[in-house]
Length: 169
Ligand code: NI
Image 1 (cartoon, rainbow, N blue to C red):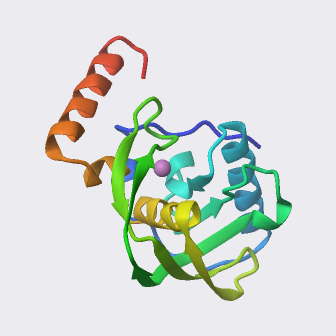
Image 2 (cartoon, protein in one colour; image 1 turned 135 degrees about the horizontal axis):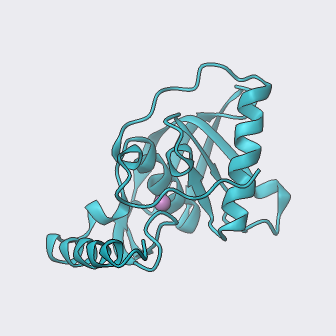
Image 3 (cartoon, helix red, strand yellow; image 1 turned 120 degrees about the vertical axis):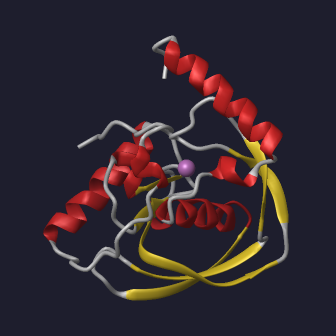
């Protein structure tokens, strides 16, 4: 089932999530729905709060559906190692139409659980490393705009306020 993507302004996006404890059928259905919703929105990552659910799980596929093996369910993820720097443009399905350059580590190793609760560790670089950081931020209630300069962030917030007033957000 495709869920609508929650947009900036909804408090669920800025609230830290609760750990996943049950890896049952219902949980797998949720992750399937998250993939479906992410592909429909043409994103490379989606965190549960973005469909209004305060659970510590994100789905990622940096190939946008081209390689089934690239599909990742990351439940209760944490960054166990990070090094280097990359400074690239980032966007977010919950803040459509706005992008900004965000400083992230170049290499990131995460530890997480998959859809059945099995623990795994994964080393990443480039876009995947950035996706891990962006999505884990979501699970902590942090949006990419909070990494921008205050000037840039305020500009984006002001534009969003205008869009909301016009009923376009
Ligand atoms: Ni995002």
